[in-house]
Length: 121
Image 1 (spheres, rainbow, N blue to C red):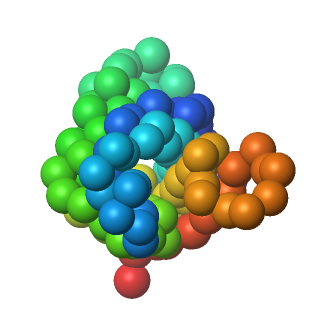
Image 2: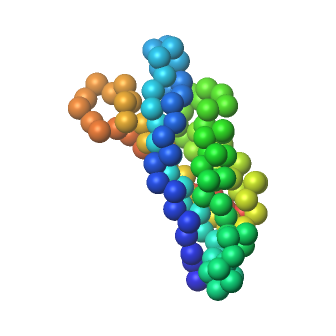
C-alpha cells in the first residue's frame, strides 16, 4: 500500500539562479510535494496527530527554499527533500518538484522544472 500527501505549488519568492540579474531581482518559484507514507492508521482513527501536517510541510519547505540563495533549482529540491525527510519521520519517500516559470531562456516557454524523488536509506 502506498498512500500520498500532496501539496501543490507552494509559491515562494527567492533569488535563486546563475545570473546576476536573478540574484539582484529575484523571482517566483513553485514547489510541489508528493509524500508517500502509510496513512491507514490516521485514516482509521480519524486522528490528525497520526498523519503529517500539511501546514508544517508548507512552512518547512518555505523556510528551506528562502533561507539562502541556491544557484540551481536542483539544489533547492535536494535541500527541501532532505529537510522534510529529517523533520517528518512518518514520510517514507518524497518527490519534490521545483518550477521556475521565469527561467532566463532565449525562447518562448512556460517555464522549467526539476523533479526528484528521495527516500530513507
